[in-house]
Image (cartoon, rainbow, N blue to C red; front, top):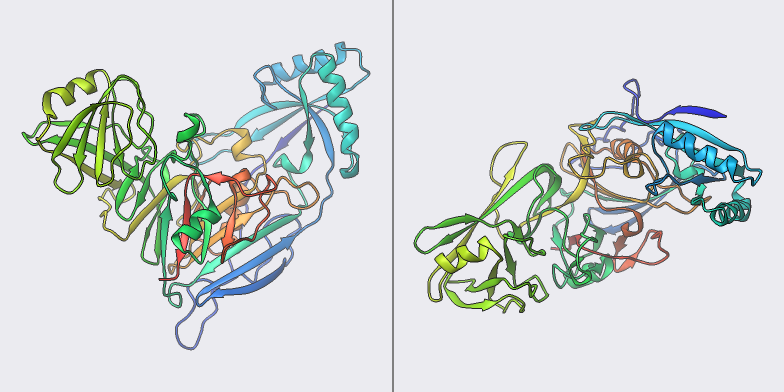
Length: 493
């Protein structure tokens, strides 16, 4: 049999955002909504509230119950759970031909359109249906298929991203900057290259609360996997370059602003020769110039390239060296291979001067972002809400797949209200019968419900973590806190 499912947020969907109640003196800039939960059966959710500090409240929100069970998903030749209708039909025929007595079904569905990518149709092959307590029976079928040479996996139907009754389990931090007297900051912990837990970074920064940050590069050398896959600015210093057009949050004092950014770094010799620097604190590709700051925390790659060591205060080139050493304190290093090394040999000689000119551009306004000591930028996420409307720019952020847009995962979310209040939320998931997580569309609905006029999704899945006063308050899906690339911390001052 086959079925067709159209899922996602329709143009006719109306979301209700609770009005901020008035106060006799200074009205709150952020408050928990009184409206019904925007997912599932749309009723008022159960919630608890705890005061964390003046102007900071923590809420736990629970809603819905489990009604779905398990199925078996047959994997496509590329290893994905979905593919073309023709590929799915071929897989279904393969299951039937295996002679196991299994009856496969081809199910077609649509990954909904996002702001920068149209809707796309896919198909998947499913075998069987079992209750929440019958997972072992689904596992047995997966084993049978494997023995027949067919790859498959046990799939919880609540993860699909189709209609569900939940349940959902969220933690929400709301910060009212009119009462809160501290500040917000981004941190990469002890170094750019090293991954650390959100709680360890919060402790190092002496933060009262924190959430995990953006995506980090798991496709590089193991000792460099803390490198953010997008822009990072800490205390006004660019520590990772932007991927142009990707969403980011700019933090300054106790203000937060979501936008899209680009960055440029230019090396300028004492004689005025100029050349682009392609990267900051990451692995270098052939013929690239990459700058390494003392925050990098690892030796540069011994790739046969050339490096110059530059005094950070004066810009004087202290020495030229072969690639493959640490960045001395108080310096920065410019690393080049191929034609980039030739530029260094021609224009960056010992005793000369070399400076880096750094610009970060807000693509919404076209203006440069002042990189002052109290400026922090965290990137590596997907925009969800823009000017109060759902606006998911998944493609430019590299996350327009079915798995990232449609399927439910744990999510870490950040939003800003019309009057400047900050909303940080985690939606736990991957816990069948306990909490299902959220699709990107559902994450956008949740942030609108919470009152966000601008919102972004940060890294999720096993990375999702919220820390309050030194303790992880959500339920990381790995069973324990995952080491990540960066974090947003709320500082008491």
